[in-house]
Image (cartoon, rainbow, N blue to C red; front, side):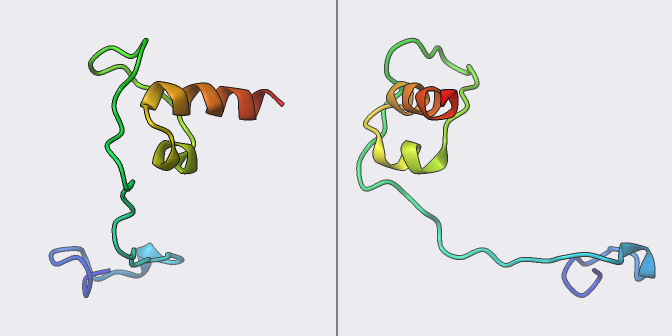
Length: 70
C-alpha cells in the first residue's frame, strides 16, 4: 500500500487487498431539499438512486421504506 498511501508500512500484512479508483462525482441535476420530518443532523437511510431523483430527502426516505417493505 505504500505506493498509494505515503507513510504506510511496506509489509505483506496488507494481502489480500483491493484498491479502487472512483470515477467522477454523481450529482443530482436539481436541488434536493430536506423536506418534512427531518431535523438538522438526523440520519436518514435512503437508496442512492432515489436520493438522486427525488425532490426531497423525505420523499427519497419514504420511497426507500416502501421499496424495502416488499
